[in-house]
Length: 115
Image 1: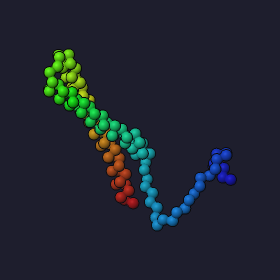
Image 2: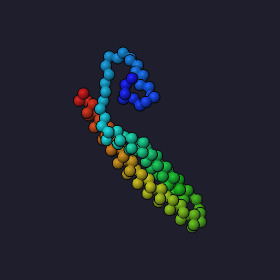
Image 3: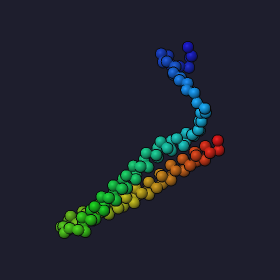
Image 4: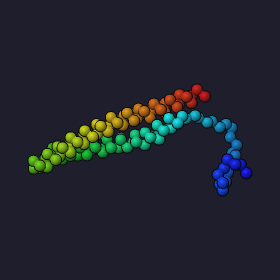
């Protein structure tokens, strides 16, 4: 028995399937960490941006098409301004994250083309 395995664990099963070629691409740990950390959050910021701007637009349309009291009017103005402001913040964050992830992926593809 191989001493590299933890006591009581079984070595992995290996299945061999005949292929013409096997291509392995190198990915650095930094690239993998960037994709793990920033990949899913990229879509989260896009979703939050769409939600914020949609909500702000709904408040603005309601504000412009109805007659309401001054207190409700003020609340709707604040909600619209806050929604548009957050939408702008989220789109800026999304664009930065998207740029970083796209740059990482393009670096990987360029390196793979050399192979």
